[in-house]
Figure 1 (spheres, rainbow, N blue to C red):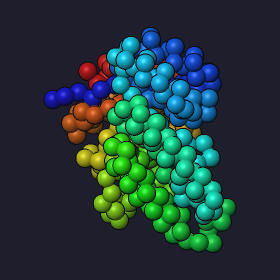
Figure 2 (figure 1 turned 60 degrees about the vertical axis):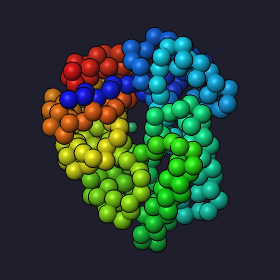
Figure 3 (figure 1 turned 90 degrees about the horizontal axis):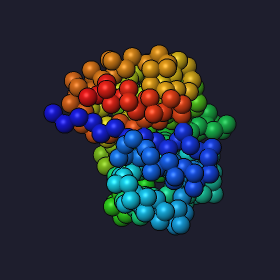
Length: 260
Ligand SMILES: [Mn+2]
């Protein structure tokens, strides 16, 4: 059986300038990195070129995490929704230019007026995802939707939400399972087994069960032995990305040993 490929998200360097993050790429202990297209690391043409050069020099492949700060694909405000979609569209084009294996994005979030319009954000979320899928096909980029964490009013956090989503659509959009997020609603094993054919990518970081802390693997309360066992049971052979922001090198090694 093929084992999962283990990679590293550059999220842990998001407080550093882009050039410093790019320098880390020379020494990362993995061939697969996830670039976060947000904050100080927001992509542009020059940065894409620099990343392509680094990828060639060090034999790296990448995935791209779409921007997520202040992005809401379920926004009830047309101008703000359009701004979000415009930014995402740009990010997807950069992912294509990077030859990214995957473009990871977040579902929408409820707003202060959501309760006045029941079902409206869910419908807008779906419509935006449909538009993003079309765009992805045009760019030849594979895209996948991430389960997002409690306690925020995101629209797609649980197994139930994703079950409903896949029941309503037949869109070509896979699932990125964030283990830290799924731990907060105690659905790690449930997600893995319910969507074994839909999960295209996994984000791994630890937490104490209440907040999305992005701790090092083994520094929170997640049962990683059970996680590894379930991956074996479902014959998962795709990608697992370390998304910790501390004990990063150790987390990579721990995960490599766990999934060996
Ligand atoms: Mn994540």
